[in-house]
Image (cartoon, rainbow, N blue to C red; front, side, top):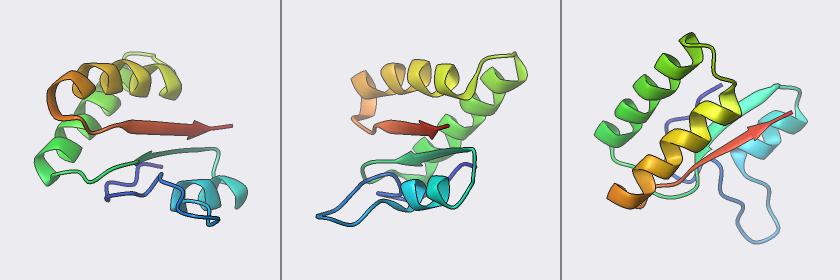
Amino acid sequence: MVISSCHSAEQRADLPSLAAELIQGGVPCVVGWTRPVFDEVATDAAEELYRRLCSGDLATEAVVVHGAERRSVVRDVVLPLCL
């Protein structure tokens, strides 16, 4: 599951993130953002994520590679939470 909203994978104080709650609820893999994200950045990241998944990458591989490329440009961090 991809959550394209700001802070969807960020834990605040003693509360779990939305992504963590979904994992605890049984969703096997959740990709969310730990910081604010512009629509264009989230759209580009989702396009690249799905392209890599269709190429056979595991979700954790697709997110980590794209996240590393993105960090140097926009400072938005993708955090994969997968079981």
